[in-house]
Length: 276
Image 1 (tube, rainbow, N blue to C red):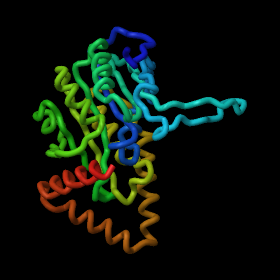
Image 2 (image 1 turned 45 degrees about the vertical axis):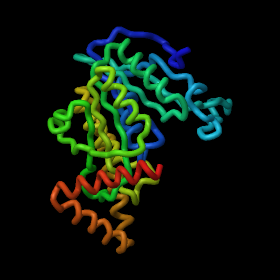
Image 3 (image 1 turned 30 degrees about the vertical axis):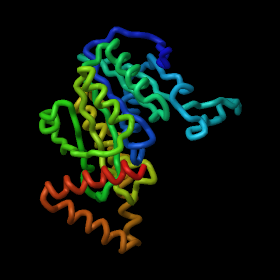
């Protein structure tokens, strides 16, 4: 029995998929927040969701008791929902959710079957990792694809990572095996700022996702939030000479030749994935 529950099955115009999961592989919540920018900023509709009872260990990821209007209590379960966004030229299918604990093969098979029913032939997946990068510099983006030429076309550094993977890695391979073109984009989040939301990475992933999908989204508010975040960090650094020196060191390392920087980032991805 399928865990995917349909609310509607709309007929879409040349849809592209955007997929991100919170949890493992989502440093600073950057990937999931970037996908949510599209859902929250554009006219979206939920068309399907996965039954959480089939895919989560509730002793690890417990449902939350929340207070609604009139202090009425309700339960919030971990979710994986499919949203549809209508466009003038093409439509978008967005999956925003949390990495499941169980039945990854079944989960990915059901998701891909749903995407094929909707007519999806292209997909973009998002992730974020903790790296030795400075917040004062543009956010580095690493990519992988079943069409390597796409990385050069879109200015993404290739990843040669080998090691443990998450649901995004499993899904990327399954999408390719199903004949769906997929590009995966990962942002590097400064390790000294990784215990909170990191707006610059959210902005970088949102911009790249917009470019790759062809779906425009207003990021004015997000850009302002990124600038304010950097300014707040800079102000905090004014009273910490040791951290100032460390950030300067990261900036200098980034000025070295590109090959060295890519190698360092790949190593940091490996460290992040093996430790989480």
